[in-house]
Length: 272
Image (cartoon, rainbow, N blue to C red; front, side, top):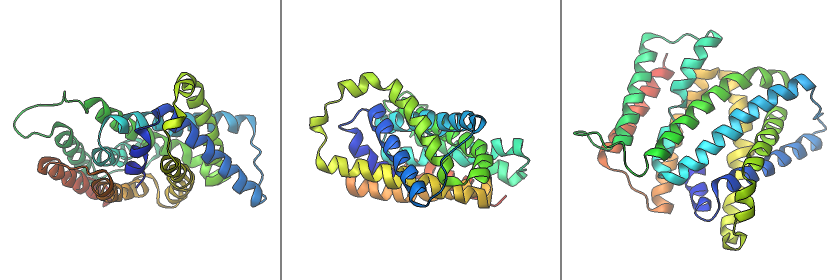
């Protein structure tokens, strides 16, 4: 549900402003949670460098690409394109010793073919140059970065737990986003952000960022990269339904067919 909710906020807030502020808020909430649970928030210098890299991937690059991409394409299409993350995850998992079968690789290629159909939205000619093409590419790039984040953060999550890793990673990543977004922050017209927009912003910070990152990292640590990431096929089902309901979005039959192909491919990858 984060896709249509965030889409409504991005209509009045710059993507960099939206991303940096909500992840700063999410990180402060997680640090507060650690303090309430009387858990130490201290990290070593070596861990800080690793968490800086994790924050760069999981927040700065991923969230930057996600927010800008979502701003340039529809919430429905964005949610489908982001489900290609398990495809990239399977590739990165090879470097960690997780093997993928022939059926799994067929699923990966099938998913990529489905993505092409969704973006092209035509079965007879190439139409990749439409107005949402840049947004679509940013979402695919974000999916690749998210898969890489999932791969490299596993060791730190196993060592320190998902809450501490997520809190520090978000703080580092959001700080980098804030530095990059200083001009946008200064130019932001805060008067146009309504109470409803702030409520939506709060939900994306607390639920869509803080809790979602924790639950995701905890699940990956139990299931492994390929199996864990494959659960993202649920995302477009909910995102499309809510985008149609609240934003009045629609998808062509060709794009719906492409979505089905993507989900079948991911299912094959998961069955590996």
